[in-house]
Length: 388
Image (tube, rainbow, N blue to C red; front, side, top):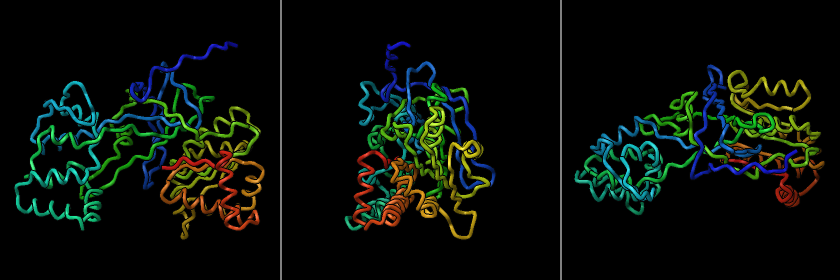
């Protein structure tokens, strides 16, 4: 066996790899309130390597209709040369190029509102902008901006004419989006699988699109390339293959645990796998259903599901944890690793509360001792979270 290490890839955040998209498949079924897709992206020829728990960073482009609307509102053609402050480019770039590929079109700031107030010539527009900028209006301004993109503001206040250069100087750099990798290199060494929730919604009477999720779903054809790099993470399955793993991943939070289980099964890990998955309805939202059922039939995974809308009283993953509190505690005190992936706002907090309650109640501890126990789990890297 060769001991020569494979050369490091020349591809990185600053020089992403043009990766071929080989599959784009809808995971959710007709009738689902969600649109969740499975993508396969090839890293063949890149020299890039990944591990379970890593993420793939994807550089998107902006939706063309939004770019066209901005050009119309600015009275621009798109071939005007600009030098956006955030890009620090040594050479001016065409306006359409920077709006399509390099700058973010969402997230206007109070500073931008102030720039419009300075330029507005219409008295009603000027008064409205001044009202938003008043010190006592900070909560109002925050809510106003949250529901709007830059295009909304330049259309809402047309008398506040900005040059193309002035406009782009208010935009931030378009950032790559990170997606938890849903495959193991032991199984697909040059292919990366992604589980993507496609974001579409409406605010301020305008349809909005998740920039990267709709880039992948709508604007990148199978057989074309996307710029990517691998973002390495400390979120990883147990190095000791004899350790048990408890994995809590509702919705697209299941992605890294698909990778973990693939990896542990391929490595013939002696440790047991216990997966908790949740979503709205079993009939439409059971992501990778056949794969999980195959693992269960083979005795390779214990699987708990929580489909919140399938009964009158909503049930979530933390409720399933409480139902199995005694067994969970047995696994944990025997050294199991505990993982959580998904929504940081509510789910991860609710799961954390449930974990502390289980440790306290099943372990016969007071709340302070349970807090210390969970802290120790974190120190030992036995409690890891990948939340967003």
